[in-house]
Image (tube, rainbow, N blue to C red; front, side, top):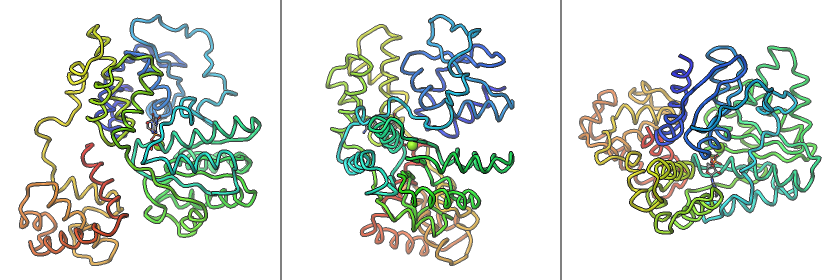
Length: 439
Ligand code: ADP
Ligand code: MG
């Protein structure tokens, strides 16, 4: 069914915590020619869906049925919206899913500054105030849920505030790619180019997804040049540095290095508490300080999940009809915490994750080829197999196409040594480990 299809789509793209919190609690209640009505438990859920999941759901429905439906979110026990009236979302001029597309909640005001993001925040402010002149392009990189998208939108808002007539465009790299491909299919390339090359600020999110897309990279190269020459501001994000994005054309890598690259690292405990406090205040939730500290202590890497935890606690207290306390929070979060004995990680899962990150196949990791592009990922996979699983060295060797256990030891030592001095490698391993922990 459609809903099942959407659930699977979300399952693939969201972490388990997010899935359990947002998707599991939503129920489709009605389908019309123009809308899908989805019931969610609270206004926080509604906001989350509206801000983060709308595009995905619209795409998913389109993939499944070829229909363009607009989702309407309804809070449980509230009145059914009157869908006979044309909704704002149907207004094509509103371009809900295209163009500037800024989330009104992602502003500098709502952004909490901490150690991990202060550089990025400062650079974002500079760019919003002096677009096109100082840091161009501005490039943010770092793990998921750390505020890259938020900062990007904040730049857009700020620029519009200062220059209300400025043309701002926010897109994910996938939207850029899709727009480009559609423009070829529909023979509207000129329109595509006009649209992308006439902006004052272009924000392109998650450009790691440009990997493998040759034609799109080519087009983006020209878009970039056109904007850059006109001194228009470009802001990009990715989960890693440009030179670490597999199959990203050298000329793009070098252009991206013309400006400033800043990383965003996970927030420390104080920052996490501050983020929770701000969020709780804006939602008018009363939560004692020790409970905020407790929640912030439980979820330590990803701000999106931190917010998810807060919603969960809030929903739990609403269902129970009691105030939010630390023990209630503990109960609410119990089911999403890593359970007492986490499911054992397999060597195969590690090989898949490493392969996916470095764009090599599991077969290549298990094979004998000695090219650098394969040897290092292979050693990393062996290293992680030793570090993250209980398998013996001979067993690990066997899982890598029958290699000797001394090869595994060698790989382990090599990577351990590199890790001591190579901060890029540290970050890469962190990202891979995170992806494994989130399975
Ligand atoms: P990324 O793009 O890096 O994956 P997002 O920008 O989507 O992360 O952030 C995930 C969620 O966390 C968003 O809801 C965002 O508003 C929130 N968030 C991230 N960083 C901060 C921050 N410093 N202060 C307040 N909220 C934040
Ligand atoms: Mg993002």
